[in-house]
Structures are given as structure tokens and as C-alpha cells.
Length: 526
Ligand code: CU1
Image (cartoon, rainbow, N blue to C red; front, side, top):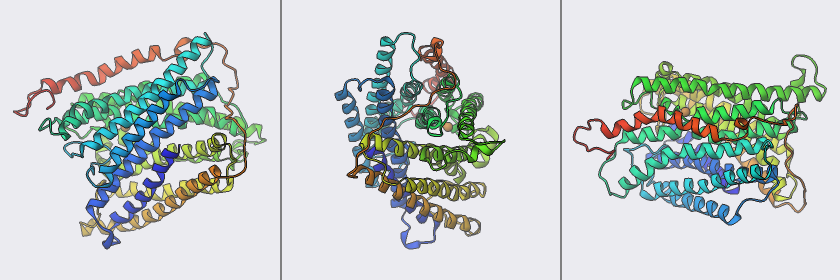
């Protein structure tokens, strides 16, 4: 968790720098080199380091606390941690020295120093140790408890480990067979159409890998914290399964404007993208129903009285309220991105950055904060330093994120490209962009202040002299689950379904690169 939040703190500072640099208000700060090094590092730290380490820590705690068994093979788990950490350090050197300014999507033909690709690979390989641990613990528990429902939080966590193995296979193939040989000079050229297709394999489900711990908290921790029960355990399982199965075969919505895939394939993936909104709606329904139960148990009356009766000063409950608000706004934007035709209007504009900061930086990360405030006292054995500071931190994060991302969406509609180091290149356009640039700096300042509050609070908790004893309390469903059909208690069937879907969705689109006429640039993707 400290690696995760250490990466977060550094990346948060960079985020503020970027919004200031690109505004064009401070000429002396403008530097293309520093800007792109910063954007690349910010994306890698937030998207890959914060998430992977947080998810591994969360998974180990969920596994041991729900299954009531120690971590399987601790040296193995630590080996995975060390491999991932070495990978981060290896990638950080070229990132910070400007040798890997290829942004966190690292699309060729931009090329980074080989250490960047090798480091990123080690980070992923380290996370595979964690996946193996989760799956082994899941199977050991099932063997020892035949016919028993696996605790929901562990079911979701194991599902996430399986999802991540499927997800990371695409980018792993791209990096191992294309980017590393190319960066090392073993091959002169690579097929960037194939590279982008393999990256698209990973690029959508990776966000679900990030999101599932947040959803796990939605279902398994929040209802208890709010003073109620989970609306339905079975529905939660169904939602997790749908998320895992349908988030995989849909990555071509990131390639709508790319020439290397045909319209039919893009439309197929586009339809899949709309299907994956279903489990999010199921989640929205179940979670809000659980909150309503809690609100009514707390004495809330009437159509909306239960909302006021929720414990708004509980960090976890506040996190979900603010997280759901951002999910509604960000989800709306996501439907625009996912629509083949409307996407053309916002493609590669600032709208896209606004969208994923709202969903990822908003909904997902605010839930990580809620989990951190809940787990820190349990894991460190010290009481939380200051609860009201945690509440202020979440509100400032929410307000800062809204102030940052609303102008970003508008700038996208005004035609501002994303991923540009300076917006000061066209006087006519720039004039209409200026007020929004100013607002965004204000949002960035609030977010950095909020980040500081988080780190300070966690640090003061950890170094406190007092002691605290506690364990995570998982929510009970209204109706206890006694027996479950095997397909809601295991992933065997779902792995077969995923394999079938992936074969349909990616089989031909990948294979075609090995047979298409490449006009003299060589076959087999090189
Ligand atoms: Cu996506």
C-alpha cells in the first residue's frame, strides 16, 4: 500500500505541473521535454503502479481475512512483490530522464529505452505471482469446504486475478514479441497495427482490473459501514462474472479511428461495450438498494429521507456517495466514447482525458481512499489519525475532480487535442480555451491539496504511539446464501466462455496481420 500511495503522491505533484505547463500562462515553465516525461511518468505511476500494488495488497488482505487462512507461500508472494518493485525502479529511470516519453499507452512508432519495456514487463510478471496466490488460495479453500459458497469478497478478488491474467496477455505479447526486440535493435521495424491491436486487447479490461477492488468494497464493505445489509449476494456474483466476461472481448472501441481493423469488427466490439454497461447498472442498483436498506434501518423516512440518514461522516460511505456521483457523470461520457459515430466528435480530444480522470481518478480512486482509511488502522494496529481530515480530503478530491474534468470535457468539444504540451499555438482557438485552462489549474491545486491530506493522515496514523485492534467486517446479505449453483461459485465455466469470446473477437483481427500483403515491409509482424 505504501508503494501504491508513494507513487500516487509523486504523480499528483506531476499532475498539477502538467495542467500549469500546458495552460500557456507561465511561459518560463514551458518545456516540451519535461512535459512529456512528466505526462508519461504520471500515467504509468497512476495507471500501473498505484493500481497494481494497491490491488495486490487488497487481495492479500481479503484472502486472509475472508478465508481465515494465512497467505499461501509467503516467500512466493514476497518474490512477486520484489519482481514488481524492481520493474518499477527499472522503468522509472528512463521515464524520469526523458528516455521513455511515450505516454502510458506507449504506442509504437514512438520508441522508449528498452529498460522501460523490460521494467513494465517485470511489473506485470510480479503481479502474476499475486494472481497465482489468489487462485491457489481460492482452490485450497474450496477443497477444504466442499459445496460451501466462497465468501463474496474472495470470489470477486479471485475473479479479478483471472481477469488480469487474461487482460495482461495482450500487452505481454506486444511487449515481448514486438517492443523489446525492436527497442534492443534485434529487428528494424514492427507492425504497429498489430501492436495497437494487442494493446487494445488489454486497454479496456485493465480498467475493470482497477475497478473491481472498488466494486468489491461497494458490495462487501460499504453496506456494513452504512449500517445495513447487502441487497443480494447472488446478484453481486452475477455482476462480477458479467464484468469479467464482457470487459475482455471489446477493446476495439479504442481503435474506432484506426485503419487496420474493419468496420464490422469495430461494431462487434462496440456492441460488446454496451453489454458491459449492464453489470455496472446491476451494481448501481444493488449498491443503492443496499444503501437504502441502511438508511431506513438508521431511521430515514420517505422517498429520499434515507439518503440524509446515511452516515455521511463515515469515510467509506462518503466515498461511495461521491464515487457514484462521478460514475453517473463519467458513465454518460463513456457512452459517448463507446458510440462508433459520436466517438468521432471527441476522438483524441481533451474530452477523453476528462472522461478517464472522472471514472478512474474519480470513482475508482476515491474508493481506494475509502479502503485505505478503513484498512490502515487494521493493518498498522494504530487508530486513524484524524477522521474529519479524511472527510475533508474526500470532499476536496470530489470538488477538485469536478472542477478539473468539467472544463476538460468542454475543451474537448471545443476541439482541443489531448496530449499536447502547449495549448498556445493557435490564437483564435486559444482564446476560447483560456478560461477553461484557468479553471483547470484551480482544480489541480485542490486535488494536490487533497492528496497531501491523504498522505499526511496515513503517515500520522502509521507513526502514532497509540494502538488499535480490529478486523475488517464484511457485509451480510439480507438473505443468507446457503447453496449456490457451481457457476456462481467457480470460474471454470467462465474461463471457457471467455476463451470462446476472445477467439471470436480477436482471432481473425490478429491473424490477419500474418497473412496480409505488407507491401515490402516483411511478414510476421516485423
Ligand atoms: Cu475501453
